[in-house]
Length: 184
Image: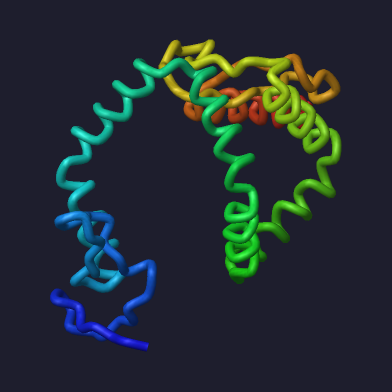
């Protein structure tokens, strides 16, 4: 296999399909002159330098394209690229830190079956389109992708839509109330 030296770090990297540049020059694809690590670092630094510009562009796109249209786009994307997405999921699942995280979640789910059932039912209803997730928090009004907060886990589709901040506050408030009852 042919190799090339990175122009930034000097390390050799193989010339495989993934090292083609996305830029076309005179109608031809060209090789990247940097290794994947250096390209990733460059992209990260570039994003951090222009973070406000990228966030503004993303916000503008969200305002321009309706949420339902985006949901439909992603649904079609998942259907078209099912095999590739499954392959990536299998690779991610094989990593050790992911396995530990899944084990922790499995223990939590086993100890909280009602919560797990309730969350799953809500997720299925959203995916079917029975419930439409709003685009702002019902408590503070912040535009975001809100979480569904269950006051009663026996009613899985009866939720309050809260941003992460308000959701955390609600849980901390609830746990303080429960601690107060336990001490009485």
